[in-house]
Image (cartoon, rainbow, N blue to C red; front, side, top):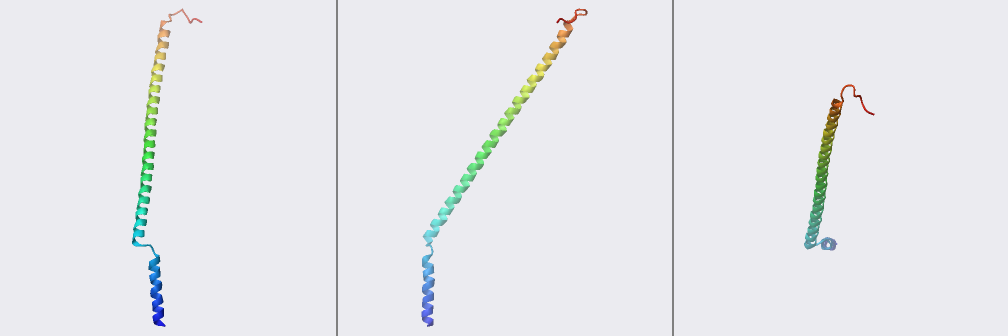
Length: 102
């Protein structure tokens, strides 16, 4: 009885080993996993690069807009100064007794 039980036990263990994946199948699965991981890393890197480019463009646009606003403000300041000078000159041209013309 012990011999039959031992023989059945060995046959059962052999069938478990035979049913599992072979070394070649395991290697192929590991290769596919590596490819999948590499693709995932490449996609994440591309996404990060894309985001970095978008951020850099937004930064450059913001700088350009700030420069444009600064130039407009400077031009407005110069225009206001010119208007004030013109008013001063007009006031100086009015002689006493002439008054303002309507």
